Length: 480
Image (cartoon, rainbow, N blue to C red):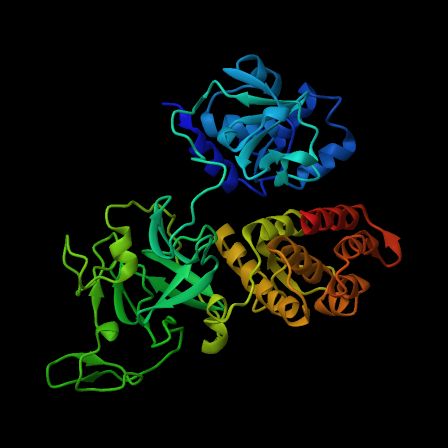
């Protein structure tokens, strides 16, 4: 069965940040595959290109046409996509009804995702990025042979306002704070229960989440669990803040007159506390005692909105945790206080330039480092998963989000905020605070502020290619 235009768009969004290597179609890059591609494409694979490609060893990689092939499973090059297209229109005909069509020019292809933007595997120095369609000299718009366009992605050029509250969407549930803004990468409290939303805005369900060196678990009703929980046959204890007990934790269990177990943090030894009780998972998640099948009453609003949906997020297993605690006020700060957070697009930009290593190594300064430059609590020999590396990056970025929010004295767009966080993360919050860039932005000179980015491309007095490319991408994001 052909992929739909909506599936193509969502697939491409999920591959943002994927490295570009010519000839790759989503495979994991190996030395043998690199040698084969170099032999087949000697004009492309120069010594410099091979060196760059080797930095992506062990990762899924793609080229421009490979992004579409990866989704459909049908191998074609960019020229063949045009030759086999059901319909070819000049770029001037591009409109919102064409979301999911391909954008084409000789030697290159991308996917239009609507609202004037596209996703393209742009080149080895850029990877897979979201860009404005007008920034690339596209020639044609292609209705692809391998995609099912029977379901229109964009109903109209001006979509109707989305209601606020809980809604089932794209295989999960989201909480809309405003008609076009849902909670993402953040906590949100509703009716006394806490929920965590991932980068796509979906509430986490039946899964672990690492936040500020503490593990949390979210049950079948999406809510953060507390108390004693039996998860996949193993008992865990979570305190009143939802944090899993760590190695060496000692506490005394009390039994009330009804035989109910209670822990020291609970407020009463006589009144049963539902969030501190024992819940059992039957392999698929915690079954809340207060819910009944087929009835909305008694269920929390997230579960009520979700009924009949299917959520397939991959499970995360808890590793050995490190000592340390998190401030409750800081942990649950964010959207509730109106504080701006970096978007997925901004994080993808940062990931392109930071690189990721899943085993601890010593940086140039000799500090044990892991993931995307994470150093807190890292010891040599430590290993993490890709999901944990991304969780660490988001937590490390939190300090820079706060720093940017603190120094801003004017309103900015999401893309401008993302560019400033990337700038601060790379150069330090002090560099932004004292910069001409910030002064010009506060003076209302957006163009002048953008033109300051390229000036920060030196290290030890030398211009570095990597810094030059990063500053240009930050500038482009800032102006988009």
